Amino acid sequence: MTRSHYRFVAMTVDMDPSQPPPLTRAVCRTCGDRSPEADPTYDLDAQCAQAQRWCSAHTARDHPGGRHFDYTATITWHWTVTPEEDIGPSA
Image (cartoon, rainbow, N blue to C red; front, side, top):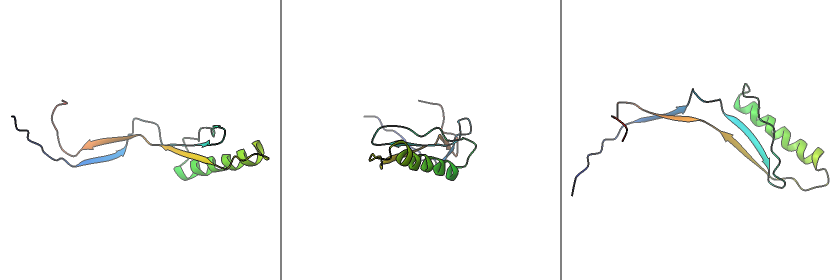
């Protein structure tokens, strides 16, 4: 039997600067229609407001007689984990 040595290293989880900014979308759970891609220059609150406006318009304008009341919101974040000290070569 071999013994392994483990070392605990503090890690930081943060936005990955090499990836695009967060993106918010909404999907109608009744028909599967999706909101347009949010403007990536908007902050997260503005993106959510844009998706919520699409949900309201989709319900009222696109399906005024239907029952398109249920939506799923998805926010895509790109994260990276950075060790706070050297953890050696990859396994």
